[in-house]
Amino acid sequence: MRPLMLQGHERSITQIKYNREGDLLFSSSKDQKPNVWYSLNGERLGTYDGHQGAVWCLDVDWESRKLITGAGDMTTKLWDVEYGTVIASIATKSSVRTSNFSFSGNQAAYSTDKAMGQNCELFIIDVRNADSTLSEQEPTLRIPMVESKITSMQWGPLDETIITGHDNGNIAIWDVRKGQKVVDSGVDHAAGINDMQLSKDGTMFVTASKDNTAKLFDAESLMCLKTYKTERPVNSAAISPIFDHVVLGGGQDAMEVTTTSTKAGKFDSRFFHLIYEEEFARLKGHFGPINSLAFHPDGKSYASGGEDGFVRVQSFDSTYFENIFE
Image (cartoon, rainbow, N blue to C red; front, top):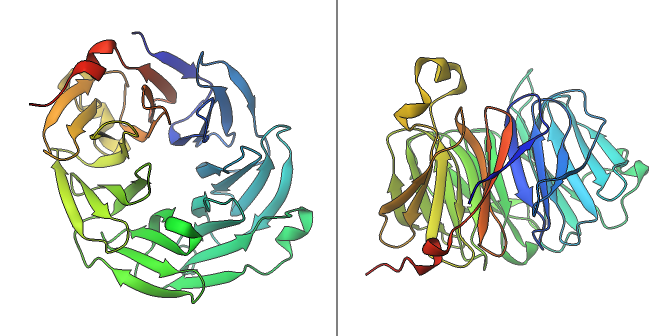
């Protein structure tokens, strides 16, 4: 099956996300314009114009009504998915690195970078009846991160907690009501955590780290369950919703890309078995490191966004579904 090549960005992809049904695929890149695509045929529905800097993160809510983006222009923007208009624009003191809706879609969280004399901070806002006055309202919760900067974030189960991954390899769980850290993983990872993605049922999540590994953690206790080792930094990892499979994407740092050829296999998507920790497949494609991966909610295809500015949507062949581990 040939992949769909989604060509709409001028610069490298930073994050891709499916909506809950999986009919839409959202992509953000460093070229200031998040895009939305039909995931079935790769047709571009439109762009969300308004940011003045690289868009680092995006998330779409449960009903595909709102989109939240965070960018290097020191704003978080809330968009109307259907019309592409800005509902609210929230100014921050430094660039926004992560942003996520809670599962219910009532709240959203975003974190800012440690830069320009500002500490890294985690903000939680109420987006139930969001309008342009949201930028003047105080966030419902504000947690300063003193030790290290947040590089990835997920909401925990029941919207009661937030799981954060930091640039020193630490993972923490924060209680949203109290604003306190409840669980700390210590240092399972030796380097920064680039990406975290929950499993379909929300009981575990997979992390992708610069220390050349991806790890599977329990979402409540932060116990490290499995480790998937590679030879190069992992930029993104995702768990299949139907099989015990994990897909890893990475490559070396973007600045070192010119020193390797595509044939070296550094830019492949690599499939590991969730339980046995064995690699069983590789898929070529990108001309640069993979920055973001996402499984389709039905598990029959997956998408990858790379440093080359392409989003590739790859449907699995029938052999993938028949491949049963002995």
